[in-house]
Image 1 (tube, rainbow, N blue to C red):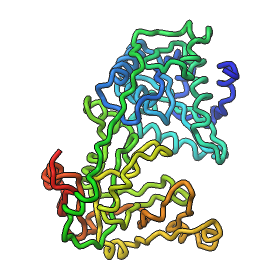
Image 2 (tube, rainbow, N blue to C red):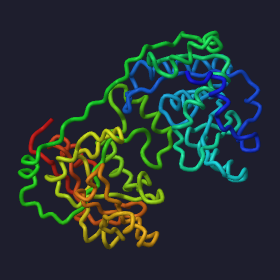
Image 3 (cartoon, rainbow, N blue to C red):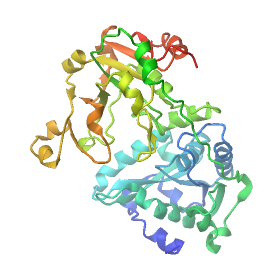
Image 4 (spheres, rainbow, N blue to C red):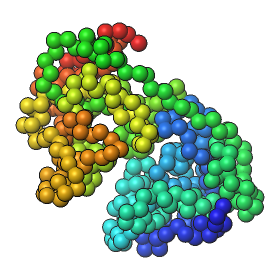
Length: 399
C-alpha cells in the first residue's frame, strides 16, 4: 500500500469529542470488528457471509467486547445491526458534513442510532468530517484503516483476495489480532434480473388501452427503501434466505400497501425529494429496462404504477424541460426542479420525464386514476389482492 495502515488511519478527519454522541465510556473499552469485503448489491439472508457475520457479531457481544463498525456499506452495517439486536454495545463511525456545528451533531447522530434500532446508553456514534464536494466513499479506506488499527480483535468473514482488506490483514500489526473462527470464503451472490416482455408482447397485452398516463417504474432498491429504518431492512433480509427482500416486485407491493410513493433526492436538483415518472407508453419503455452500468443498477424494471396525467398536473406535477447550462441558469430555483441538463452520457430527453415534488399519496387518487403494471398474468393475479387500482399484465404469458 502507498501509505502504511497507521498513516491511512490518521488521515481520517475524525471529529473531537465535542461532537461524539452516546455512551462515551465505550471509547475506553476493548473493541472488536467483523470484517467483510464488498459483496453483491442484492444479498440474500441465507448467504454464507450473512450467516457467518451474524454469528461473529453475536460472539463479540457474548465476549463482552464493543463492536466497532461503520456506515454506508451493507457489509459493515449488518454487523452493527446484529450487535444491536443481541443487545450488545456498539461504536459506529458516522460521516458528517464538514462545517457542521457541535449543537447540530447530536440530532443527526441520534437519527443514525434510531435507524439501526440501537439505544443511546449502549452505543456511541463517533463522527468524521466529509469536506464539501467530496464523496463519502473517498474516506472509506481511511475509515476502515482506523477500525483495523483501533480494534483489539478482528474477525474476518468474507475477504476478497487481492483487495484492500486482504492486503491490510497481512500487515504484521494487524495479523496478530485475527480470529478466523467465522471465515466463510469469498463467493458473492450475483443477482439476476428477469428480462422484460418484448415490445410486441406489450402492445398485444395493452391493445385498446387508452394512454393518457405517466408511469413510475420501480426497480430493486440497494438497501432500505426511502424513509425506511435500516433495522427493518436487515430484519427482513434475515427473514428471506433465498430471495432479495427489496426487489422491484416487493418495492411496488410496498408502495401499494403503504399508500405512499416516496420521493427521492438521488440525482435531483439540490437533493430535493421528487417522484419521477415517464410519459412513455410501456411498449416504448421496455427497451430501456436494461442494466445501467454507470449506477450499478437497473434503469427500470417491468413493475410500476401509472397515474393519469391530468390528475398528476392537479397535484402539481410538471413535465421536465431539457437544455444546457445556460438554459438552467435562466430559471428560478423552483423551476430548476423540473429541468434536466442534456448529457452526452445519457439520452434523458427520450424518457419524457414528469416530476412531482415530495411524495405521491395514493389516497389522493380515485380508483380509476391509476393502473398497476406487472410483467405477466401470474403477477397480475397476485397483485389483484393488493391493489385497489386495476392491474394490467404487460404480457399475456405466465412465469
